[in-house]
Length: 254
Image: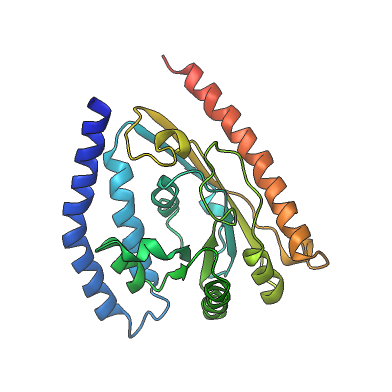
């Protein structure tokens, strides 16, 4: 009962704070767009907006590492595993510039989804080939402008935390545009907010880390399928190591 109450209060807090924060985002978009066509400032504000909710939830202990692995003004194809709806909030804690590729349903959420449209994040209707092709074209535009693209190539959340097979779009983009892949690994969010649940689950340790980029030269002679498998195996190995670290860290706590 207590966990459900905490979840309800948390959702109400998100709803109420989203009203003023959206209007701040709208004003920021209007005043900065003439000199900030990539919307870097608006995205940083969105990172702050999203981070408020993980900062205020004190039982969520989030460790962020690897920001130094992001080169300033470099365009990346960023790929991450996907465990929970909470991944988006946690990934915003990285505070570097990128454009999300997200399912179209997220853009329909009042205020939060409208802000995603303000940021020119990229819509995807899963299972729709025409939508996938449009998404890839929009990704190319953003990459050409110098913005990184953030994708979760599993396509949907993993119910058990295991990394599922990767779809190929991100790797096709990296090969076509000859850009580095930036791997991001998230651990623990599936326990804090499991799939098909909105209930608070108590104290949870979460971990997100940006690893060193995989340069184009490392996969330029590979197919998209082989590149996807290479990156997936890398993420699996790093995720297993992070899970072991998190478990050991929890055991050390009194």
